[in-house]
Image (cartoon, rainbow, N blue to C red; front, side, top):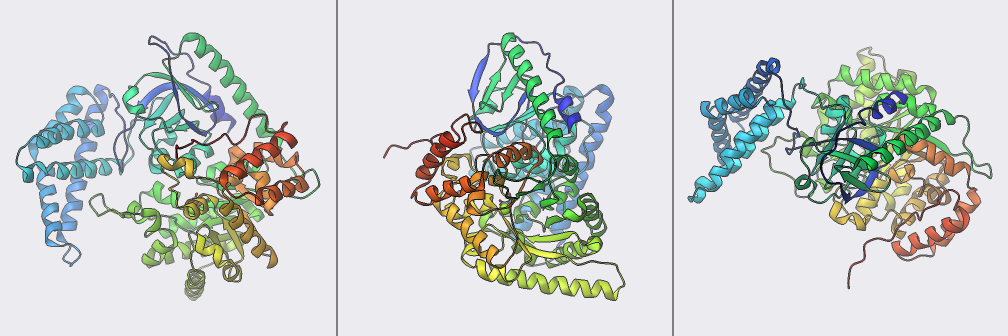
Length: 607
Ligand code: PEP
Ligand code: MG
């Protein structure tokens, strides 16, 4: 971790020519970065423009040819499927796509761009297909004009195929990524190049991309409207993830100020890394257990150093991103064993794949209208029984040292837990019959949808533990898309309904002695943690970068005070009232911990 911080300090000396400009945006991951803008393009597969050298041209041409061959094979395979699923019209679409893909003129134009403009294959595909699309759009015949959609699909298919293998071209070391949205899979792909920061137009605080950014210590801002129209590749910028500002073309004095601030910030972070160990208690002696949320296992070492006891939530679907599809059984066994060994007796709560059908689907498949309410998480598991069984089998095989706990995402009915138990038993019996070594797992459920709150007693009776996912809980309770910047003002973590739901779960579990780990982003936020403690939480899980700040708050407040705070909040009738009352309480009791107002007023709408 310290290494990563050191690396972030590099490349601060950059020339400056333009006029300084400041753009406001919302901080979703704190920190400071100074670097050069790299704009991301593309939908499912995101990419950026890279200039290549003469020596790289041949390799880039080969990447393109390979991707085109792959795309052709995929289309032929789909076209050859003789079942009713592929209806006539769909088959016609695939043949049209095949014709486009096999068009020599299109291919040679793309190859020419790679050679002459010396750019990466992705960029060449983009500019050539965009040129074609622009021409199609001017055709007067409506039927022909619509063909541009086929071209868009074909371009996306080639771009996806280009993503199937690792590009040899990495981001420049001081890159600040700018995009409409950044997909989590894109960020995973870019991690090795160590980008400095992310700026997006869209995406909420709890979206997976930003959860990952916080885990990676990567400053991130969102809600930067039309940012892609305001910047160009190579523009110098500062990302101020403390004050929610992007400073484009910074003046040399601004740059000097920020360089100093960045040094101080990283020194402070480095200090905080060494600070934590031992039991964490509130001022009045109640022990609070902190665990780590992990998407990438390599983050655990830093989390443990900061005082994390095991992993409260391991999002296994990140393996899916890494393997660009369902990983095989040996790969999963290996991945789960590796993490189980790292955490030792503190244990790891591994969540089965929390994927949406869109992540599995082909670009040309019809999209779900409401993916958050669609075929995802445990539902996707049941609808892909082979893959679900395989994952459970891999978990059982990895559980030989007995510290693996399995969590089911998005449980909405206790029957889903019972059915999973049956599958687990069958898989275990079958492994034993085959004399394959396996262990026992404890089974838990994510509590994150309203139906689980209302049936919490039934769920508690079936599980060994619970993970309370506040990100989705807020999303589903308030019917507010956690990924949609437009409704960010409606994402109210302290809404009275959320407080009541959290309390209901904690009380029901306590009655039966079932542990609850609160593991949404609420648990990693120093401002919300006192509320969780007051509601009865004693196990919270968060990304490594939040641990130091959360530990500080917990060790400097009394549980009694937190309970007093919650008593006040429970009398409030709206989210505004709760936030106002909480801010007042913090000002009066804990101003040393919260020098700034913690819950700034939300945007007001004229009524
Ligand atoms: C949650 O929903 O709060 C949670 C922890 O899971 P995720 O953010 O992965 O949906
Ligand atoms: Mg969730």
